[in-house]
Length: 118
Image 1 (cartoon, rainbow, N blue to C red):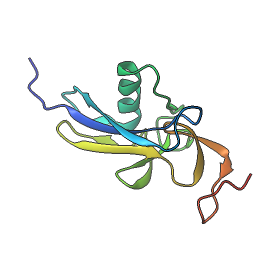
Image 2 (cartoon, rainbow, N blue to C red):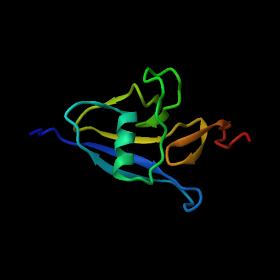
Image 3 (tube, one colour):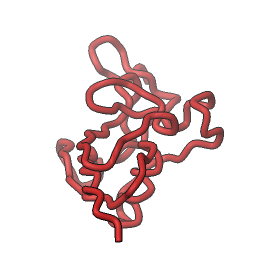
Image 4 (cartoon, rainbow, N blue to C red):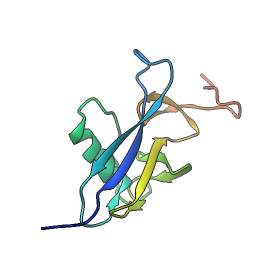
């Protein structure tokens, strides 16, 4: 039996059809080994099927489809690891407009003022 403490995942939630502003929701993910942020997002999706996220296709931090903001810093979700017992905050990448939850629109980069250029 594994006695590793869970990974606490606080994810950004925002549904433009229903929410005026985003919020963080917390999930506990059991794991005996470090998990990538992308794997954590997939686990959150298993716990709550309404959660929206993208997955990477390269798993090497090259394609950029997994870009998110991790603990306040933009990062590749597929190569950023979180260890059991840690708490991680996962938000949308800071340079693109949010579609829903942590999914961003790569065709809508944000201006310096945080507005979508399109």
